[in-house]
Structures are given as C-alpha cells and as structure tokens.
Image (cartoon, rainbow, N blue to C red):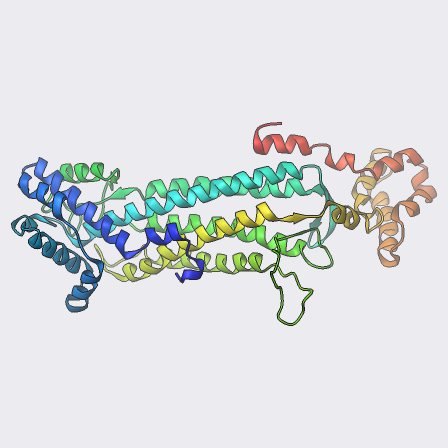
Length: 437
C-alpha cells in the first residue's frame, strides 16, 4: 500500500523486516521443539537461538539470484551463523520443514499482530460513537427514506445505529482472527512425512498458535477469506457512516459536517467551498477492501495439495486490506470526534414541510377514532399533496376539514402533530444498544 494511507504501526507489521522476523521465530521454535524430541542437537538449537539473524537487503540480493524467497532467507541466516562461528549449527536450520511450514505459520503471527491493532482501532471508534450518540440522544432530526422526509428521529439514534453495527463487525473480526491463529508444520503435502504431529503441537505452542487440525502444504484459505471479508464489512460500515455525513453536509441540508481546520482550503477555484473530502476518501477506499474479498475467495481453490497462485495475491490483498482498514478506522474516529453538528438546522429542516411529517400519526388517530382507514388515507393524502405542491400549512389545512373534525377535536389534532409521540421510546432504544440508562 502506498505511504499516503499507511499508518506507521501497521506499516511496520507488514514490513519485510517483520515478515522475516516472524519467519525466524518459526525456525527457532522448530529447532527448539525438535531438540526436545531428540531430532535436533540441543547445542545446535541453542546456537541458533543465540546467533541466528539476517539482513533484509542480503535476503533480497540472494533472492534475485535463486528466485526463491525462503531459500534466500535460510541462506542469509546461514551466512550470519557462519560469521558468528557456528556454521555447523546452521545445518539444523529449517530441518524437516517445507517452505510453507514457515511461511504460513509466520503469516499467522503477522495477521495476529495486525488483527490486534485493528481491533484496538475498532474499539476506540466504538467509544467515540457511544460518546457522541449520548451527546445527541435528544437532538431531534428528520428521518429520511428514499432521501425524502419521513418521520422524526434523533441524531443520537443515527449514531447509535452505527455503533451497534460496528459491534457486530468487531465480533466478526475477532472470530476470523481467532480462526487464523493456527500454524502448520505438516510437511510438503500435509502428511507429517518428516516431523510428527507432536512436534507440530510443540512448535505451535511456543508461538502461541494452535495447530491446524489438517492441512495440505498450506493452511486452508477459507480462513484468510473470512478475515478479509471481516475487514470488508468493517469498511462497509465506515463507508456507511461517511456517506451519511456527506449527505448531511450538502448545502441544502447542512445538519452535520466533517471537521474543517483553520487554514484548510476546499477548492482551488471557489474559496467558499467546505468539501467532505475525508468522507469521500473513506467511501473510495472501502471499495478497494471490498474488491479484495473476491480475490481472497478465489484463493481458496488451489491445485491438488498446493500451487502458488494464492501467494502473489496475498502479498497484495492481506497487507492492503489491513493497512486501509486501519487507516479508515482512524480517519472515521477523527471524523466522529470532530464532527460539527447543527441541531438548530436539524429542527428547521424538520419543520420546513409545515407538519407533513405527522401525516402517519394523523392517519392512525383518525382510524382509531372510527374513520375507515381507506377514507382516512384519502383525506390525509389529499391535504398532504396540496401542502406539498403549494408549500402550504398541512396542519392548518387538516384542522379546517369538517370530515376530520367529526372524528378528532382540535386538541386531538394538535396531539397528532407533537414530536413526543414519535420519540417516546428513544431512551428504551438507547438502553437496548448500550445496556445502560
């Protein structure tokens, strides 16, 4: 991923340095576990632990010649062992292993590190959403369906909905990350041809991993696909949040907007512009993560016990999906924490249709009072369409209709146009979502 979207901590996780560090940790855990079972001399395992190291540039230099990254890695480590006076111990490096024993197991370590960082970001965003949901719990806003005024809500309810969705996505990531916390040391076709299952269990335990119950030469890629899909779902929720704020920031609405810092410029040509550029960035980047799911799914089917068609794909999609989701989580948290909200504008927009938004309650009240529903709908819709076309006062029009007055007193008509009836259950919804009053 390009540096523009790579935050330092996640960038370090997917660096070559860290990738090879994790390869070395697998190699060392293997030599030590095999020393316990008597397959590797204990002094060799000790020497490897004390002196094994590598130089990233040297690995790349060797790879350019041998065209195999794991061989380049083991050769570079062997050179360091020889330089430290322990060339003989390097005979036991990578003993009994195939490349993917190291690569897949080490990748589980890398993705565990990435998942931990992503979960921290998701929980931090959740805290910000919860705080701002309570802040605007009673900020009355018009709810919109099909982009058209519907019935009243509160802005806090909108944010609480985002919070609730993010909790499910966080749980999905936790589950997918746990499914990926597996290693495999089962050899070239998964039969433990050179190292037994007991050794695999010892190696994985040293790395805080679980052994995959069964594998071919690779860990089954449904695990990786589920992880990318979990990131795509998080990204989709972040896009949902950003898209809503983009709509609310439109000049005709102006109920909420992303932060606009002092000295910031919105347009090279129009000095008045305050564009939702971060929201648009989040919406755009979510498309990339979502697109990666297809590639992850296609990685599941490999030839026989393994080919490497998945490998090149994963070098791109795993890092990119994690880097982008990490970036979007941080930017969405910045967006939520600094979001400018205008409750006054919300109220003016809500009132701009002169009571039309209460047509549903009026319909119910007429039906409850004894008017046939079809007749009530016809009368209410007639007044509503007239008010819509003429920008007239819907409530005044209804209050002067003799057919309505036969069923509802002026007091009852007034009650049909109050906000309290629409919003009486806001506290109950908040209690459901946040489990507190």
